[in-house]
Image (tube, rainbow, N blue to C red; front, side, top):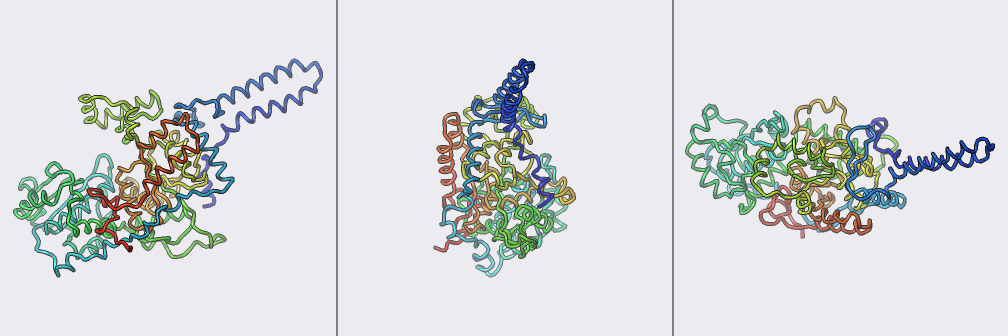
Length: 573
């Protein structure tokens, strides 16, 4: 990346604090040997100077020497003079730093760059190859009416709603209208389906499954859906409803009025029990029919090329998500035969809304408590009302039970324990981390090569996506899905679930995902004052390895996160 790379990473490698005390001590000794040879008339001045330098050395050492800092939350003044840096596990961070130096000297590479379970290679994507409804029956069944969905939420919530709507349309033998996306005061994105996904490709891919049109017929568009009883909200349908509920509640309305409008359609279709062909259709929609528009593919390819310094596709994930914008040619120049650089994509769910809603504490003292309480008062009035009516749960109990989002510092400690060196490139999905650079510093101290899309793309390249948060999220989705390793800090987030599912579906056993258990990690970190680094490494490694084992999708589990099941994938042996 040349000059651009230098600019991107400038400032991450700051060792001035570590060198401060050493330099003071060195100067002190050097000055003592020089001045001791001076005439007696300078002796008093010499003794005073030596005393001052030793006192200065002691002072600097007490401030910066890791060994004298107690293993509790530490707030060190940021170099820029801005917000204080919060360090919750300074003793572990110091041991991690030493371990990274030792690993680089030995040139050890983490075993977690590769999937550890060979059984994953036995599964391959095939939801698009299984028999369609039209292939089985010779034609689509008679049309009962039109289903229109207006989906709320961000990119990933909307994606799930689209796939669920397709399945409901098939279940009710209805024609599906290209979904609409509601404008959210949170996301503030006016994007519609065609701004994010290729409409014609979507319709073509599913044409043998259901009838899809771009809009309602004129005689239905003019109707007042609420007045005729065709407006159905999330309050009218159970969360994770069964097919029976749709047949009993929705089908009569559809047959009567010829149209049903699902407004704010959320997580309103369960995974089990669901007929095989409908589950397969949901997989086909998610993994095959929803292809990002060329604008998103092209910009995402720039992201990937600038991290990897490589211009060719490596696997099915690249081809599926980047289309024709990832070429079959390597970059020219002296490094033409070099392999692409590897990188980790890290999805840190440490935005202010996530942090505030958790009710956890993250070592920032009274300043942090005041900030987060003020945010809750404004943005989560229902939560505050509920808290007044229920028994309070302590921050310690929330952390012990795995309810607290992982901090950047905790994510860095996990990566260090798994053997990733300090030279590892880390792509950070999203950039609105609570606390900003000061909260990120414990991570960037260990891993200085942290980049975001804002670092890798110029303002002019990002301009077409300005004020379109879902389209920006699509760039992160692709960068995470095509990474060599994907790190999750909150398995409950939609982006993490969808990306990890994509990597399982298309990864071919070459797309490892790191899934720390917040509860288990909290238990390990509770011993941070006494645990040694070898034990910490062993326990974190065991935690991650266990989460990577190859399992069939369990009953009731999401196919968006766990597509390894007969409805979605084929098993070779």
